[in-house]
View (tube, rainbow, N blue to C red):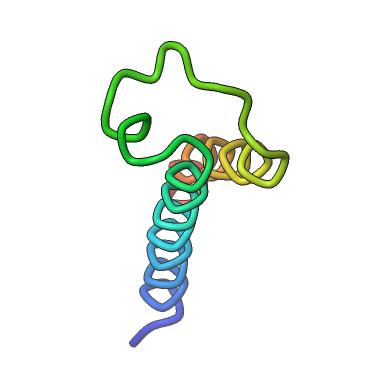
Length: 68
């Protein structure tokens, strides 16, 4: 594989791990019903969950810049 495809595959893997990890922590904090229902009135999340959700948001926001 070329270097570019390898880097793209690693970023895609990192994104997949961040999404799964974020959802696991959210499920831990609000339970299954809060995770599958509307997220308008979520209770206060743990600090590590909030930080990981911000990291995921930053990753999603900056991913297109990496692709160009």
